[in-house]
Image (cartoon, rainbow, N blue to C red; front, side, top):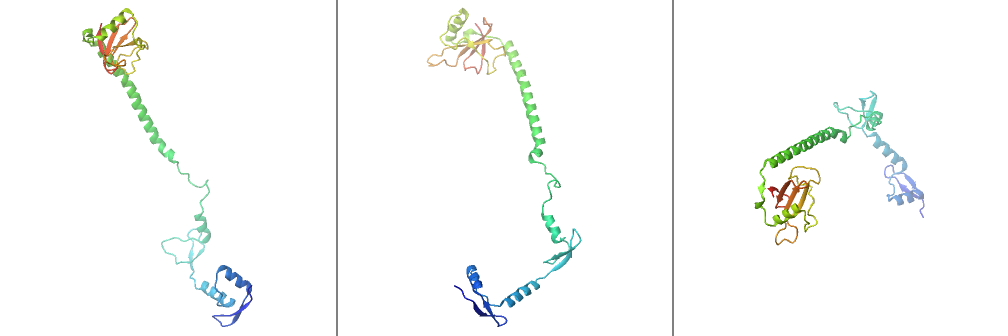
Length: 234
């Protein structure tokens, strides 16, 4: 329990009472006991405030006097307390100039890029049929090779096709879709493919005969699984 104490003042020498409540407060905050009486402590605080320098200048915004704790510079504007606080606050959204979104700034560039890519794609699509037609014209004018240049296994396949006999592979006689675009473009179902067996191969191999029309009116042979074709005459 704390009891009132009488302490001497360091400044004036008079004694003052350091009450039990003040002792408990000082102990709770970790403060040292006071060395001056309340009057000398207040006088010390007032003297510190009076020693601070204060400067007066004209507010650059409203023209009223502005009290400053520093000496203003001639080339820099100063503001009073109210104007300074107003400048720090952001204006309402209705008064602020809206900043363009980043996406809107990029929109013209994206439009130009899309139009350029579309033009390239259309040009490529236009050029592709021209190349195919050129290939078709070249194929139609190219002389057909004699069937004597074919491997021996192709003769039996050609004979079965001409006689309408069955074939050993389930894929034989099915539609050849010409996905590689190596042959002239025709309606779906025009081309038929047939396996030319490869000696020693465990599967169908890479050799094929492709016919066009029903009955066949044009014949092609490929030895590299549709990568290249040779027009032949049975």
